[in-house]
Length: 361
Image (cartoon, rainbow, N blue to C red; front, side, top):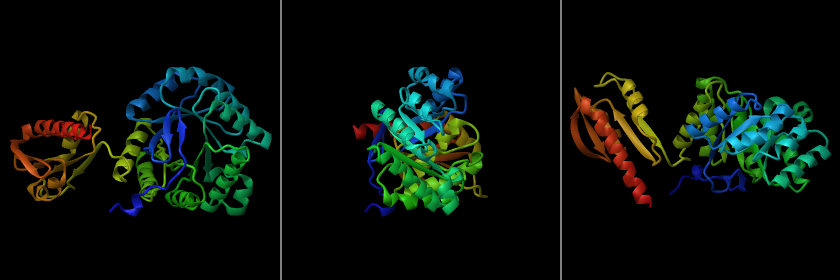
């Protein structure tokens, strides 16, 4: 019987440039460029790299009119769905709505109701959704003063902003509730989830460098996903954009939300190891073609673990003294020298993937 923890909350479904979000759609992965958007060459290069890394949706900052007016040309040069990130200046949202696939705003920071209505009207005409972005560090004054930068304050801000859009009969909405720490992020999403049926964009904001972000995002986003919360996500990292996608995809796999790609199992460092697994794993990841089937691959450094963990993998290596075994779904394929093992292993992996893909047809 399926664990209750893995049942997603039912939500409305929206479309961002053809990528479905919410409902029963796969959880999509997003990132954001860091160049000035009007620098089309740099921005396009970053978006192309993100697409190759497996990004589904990309967001760009719209800081001024030059950025806003460059969106039409940028959109013509890329194929990823494009989100415009707008703060305060509602007129930039009106320009952006003519070219992009989604607008990210905080309606409460846009200004008077007539300005919000103008943004809603532009998005309705363009048939694009709005992402309400609530950040703990930049709550509206009324919520900051009453609740502080707490999960309760974040939720009250979200509900207020949702109502601003609903008052103008707009419901193509997704919501993010981001803090820079795990506890507030998780609690805010948990509090809001039973109150609305809009899809959620998950993220920990200002999460830090690769190491800090991996830990925070794995705990917060992975935990929420395993509770059935979340429809699209971004892992925010101070560093290489492509790493955001790599970490996000890993979180999806290990939380059980993405049924594709490779899951590696390998021995911890111990005195029984018959091979140096660190360079072996690096070599496998470099040489292995992109795998789409949900394969579990095991790399074991001794016979002890081969009797346990390796036999449950789709394909496994178990190293011995100058030789080793290749095992496929618990059955030994053969015994080979260490010089042969990796080549045989990769061959078996590719064959297994083809078998799985053919079985799905």
